[in-house]
View 1: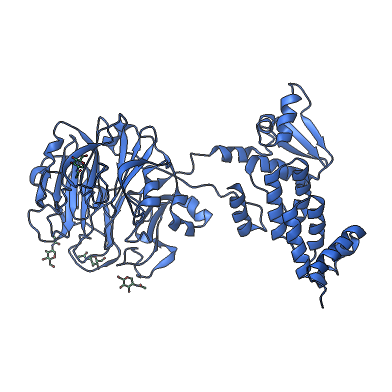
View 2 (view 1 turned 45 degrees about the horizontal axis):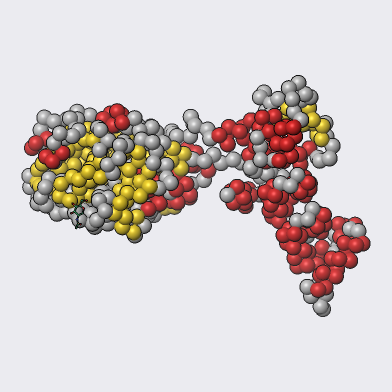
Length: 574
Ligand SMILES: *[C@@H]1O[C@H](CO)[C@@H](O)[C@H](O)[C@H]1NC(C)=O
Ligand SMILES: *[C@@H]1O[C@H](CO)[C@@H](O)[C@H](O)[C@H]1NC(C)=O
Ligand SMILES: *[C@@H]1O[C@H](CO)[C@@H](O)[C@H](O)[C@H]1NC(C)=O
Ligand SMILES: *[C@@H]1O[C@H](CO)[C@@H](O)[C@H](O)[C@H]1NC(C)=O
């Protein structure tokens, strides 16, 4: 692992000092007010699980505050920087990037419209269309619009983000949710607005006529304060502040959980959840997961892929309780997948349903640390089920903290003096380091009050410093000629990993001029693999190598051995 990381970095920056690219971690967005009681701690998620983000440079990644990967094949991404700039890249489908020019791009393009605004919610439909809500309650939409799912009273595709105001003038939108071709918005006052495709009643207007702009969902929702919204492909659900759940739209698989499979053109309460208080509800393609304030988990709807987690693939028209152990969860699903995920309060992450083509009919305990990872690695398409917030600043990994303290005079309690220069280290770090040389030195000999300067005569300053730095950072920063000295040190301290790293540096730095020197060193330090590599290089460039000073300065024994070996390889045939 260390080796790979280093090899990768060296490959990219072999002429530079190794710049540590901080691993990028993601934190869950702050829980909704009604979820706070659950106390699910913000867990760190590694964005390297999302391959699409690897097109961003280390600097670009470091600037990301929120990110959302979406689209029919998970080929689109929108991210927001710490400076609140919005960027999009990926495939241009229906103008879903919002870049205005409708051209696919692998280079992130800035969406100027949002300059300086904070994004609080993002969602996408299958067209795709994209909805975005800002901290000040504004709603923006762009992308596919054949069913008026953008909500600006037209059906022409929105290549650039449009501010959606119809019926929302004095409202603050706090959350958005998209089905395949319909849209929901939740306002600060707990009102739900819906628009777009309405073939199954998913807009909740009592008809099946498409709705060209936001319309307040009334019926049984009238007078109730919603605190959450979620959409399946063609269904809609709202969570009320008292823990009730209402659903409307397509119900052919029982995804409304109301005990039958008839579509509902108006909101309908999930009556079987009477007596429990729901805290979180999420919809997948045609199934739903809900969580009560006591930590009970319910599932209902389509079960073709085992997404209900009930051991078989029978649909359920009403909520059934699953995962009955006494743990509290966060649940995750996304309208474009049949995947389900849950995370317990103690940090265990489960997945079930469609997982990379397999149908998992029971929750499977994973090694992930976040439900987001399940979607990154196992969902099809591997889209995000929520907008992810990235936190770099207030969290430093243990290894980053250690890296920072190397050669720091302020905290050091031990100095190595090499060639008249000092290297500042920490006794405790060396004592627990993986270097057996130091472990035994400090275990047996060190006592309080002993000298705090150790003189080193055997190695050069750059070599010894690199060695100590390696113990703190796992990385080596040396030109190939110095790496030979470090190889010597690694050999005498029996540091095999360090030996391998040195060999890699040397291999990358080999030239006609230094090839013979490197070959001699490889032989001297018993680095067989490196020796073979340098030998091949010398044979391949024999004429030039034999004209270098290093070749003529080498001792006779080695020269003879080289010539004999080279002739055995056919180097002198003609
Ligand atoms: C981008 O998408 C739009 C809308 O679907 C389409 O009209 C346009 O031709 C596409 N452009 C490219 C370069 O693919
Ligand atoms: C929507 O557009 C139609 C037709 O152009 C127009 O008659 C209607 O007034 C518009 N409605 C709103 C709310 O903008
Ligand atoms: C609706 O949005 C489209 C796409 O952004 C735009 O071309 C059109 O002018 C907008 N119409 C209205 C009435 O805002
Ligand atoms: C599937 O499981 C559910 C609940 O676990 C049960 O009620 C139902 O009868 C089962 N269906 C079949 C076909 O076994």
